[in-house]
Length: 194
Image (cartoon, rainbow, N blue to C red; front, side, top):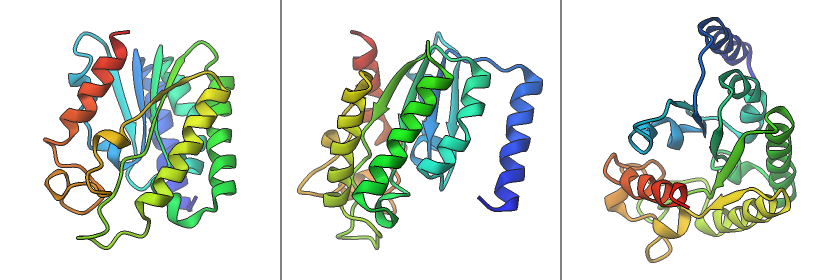
């Protein structure tokens, strides 16, 4: 983490601490989380979106302290798309497992739901990873969730068509259009009903 990013992280954490901010539900993730309006899913609860553009699994491990300041009842995590192209399967598994164990140790009474990564479209856009890599990493995420006895929410299979993220859902091959988020919101609503 560079000096600028480290200072930004510290400032953000200090701000949360000074505000004594609390949330019922925290969404932790990268830009895919950042652009989501998850408060629409839970209109009667306090939702904090801690999505950070460009964040990696290591970055999220470093931000667990921010999450703990919020004292959430629930966490929804989506992590890994910025790691897939630059990590071996073994490295990915080790990092993701560390993230989950850190969350559990820091917030032992918080309900954690891990979400699969979304597919990408590398037929129409220049993307550094592919859906085979993402599927392999999603299998690892599912296995880790099972090992830690936490909920795994499959988002991927609801967005994949003909082995790609459909163009109608994205403008750049990775990020969702505002309308495409509604599928994700619906999946979270369905999960929260049981």
